[in-house]
Image (cartoon, rainbow, N blue to C red; front, side):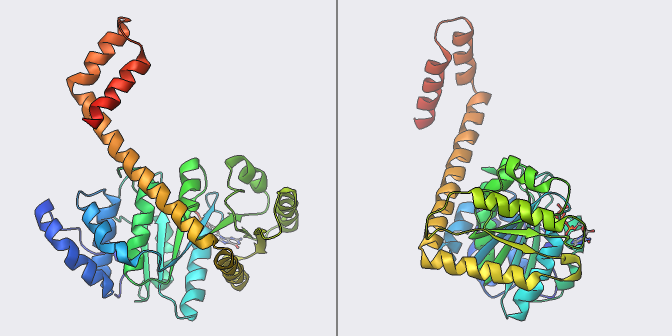
Length: 334
Ligand SMILES: Nc1nc2c(ncn2[C@@H]2O[C@H](COP(=O)(O)OP(=O)(O)OP(=O)(O)O)[C@@H](O)[C@H]2O)c(=O)[nH]1
Ligand SMILES: [Mg+2]
């Protein structure tokens, strides 16, 4: 495992060959072979037709890793922080998986992204898998692909999986909310705290990290966030989001971030929230897969004559569009 998982060769071609390969691939991934891990994630990322078999083979290993999401504006320091957290987790002896999700770029098959440069420190560490992922082509989108990639890393024996996403839109918020613990990174200035409220990422934050604390305005940003947290309604047993400062570029504050993650983990377990979050994650996953399948079937209807026939009827006023949509859905069920 002396390489990052992206460097492995492309998956073998031909669905029959791949389908026969699945149990063997999973076995190799279980044994810690980074090429097998890479191929499995590539299958997930590309929405390959053998995915149901991959998911079935990985099902027994579900829930074995702690999943930590890191989100925040572009350039706030997510990758730098991830890199440092990997170092801290390795020092504790954990096996670590990293998924850097890039929702804006098309399917890359693991091509080099800038992110990886900041994680090269761990490129030769056999206890670390690092993978950049983009899945615009995936059935069900990122919200379906990400948990499956997490399952691959769980199957490969990772104790902790760190998921980095750029927090700029709803899809990314969804991905971040799939984690057991979500870190929202902010930087001083730039009205970042206000942006966080607008983007709806405040609700998903378990821990706020004010990174780039070497810059002016860090105190004000911490105060802003604490003010917003104070306004939130919470019951006696509820989690109160933690606020931590860091200078990730110098490796400062990383222990505080790790301590906040541990504290949240303790709270999750004590209140049965870990199970609740994981069930919510599974529900979102099932929904995304089902909607993706439905969308694909509607797409194929669009290529056929059914939709054209219904459209002609609606256009000429013979039926209304709701009735037409009902008819279309009825055809999907048949
Ligand atoms: N001054 C200062 N710079 C930092 C700090 N942490 C990270 N940086 C720098 O900020 C820049 C962006 O860091 P990244 O870790 O790539 O940020 P990111 O959030 O992963 O960026 P994207 O993935 O592009 O959204 C790099 O030049 C880092 O060296 C910090 O604590 N202080
Ligand atoms: Mg990054």
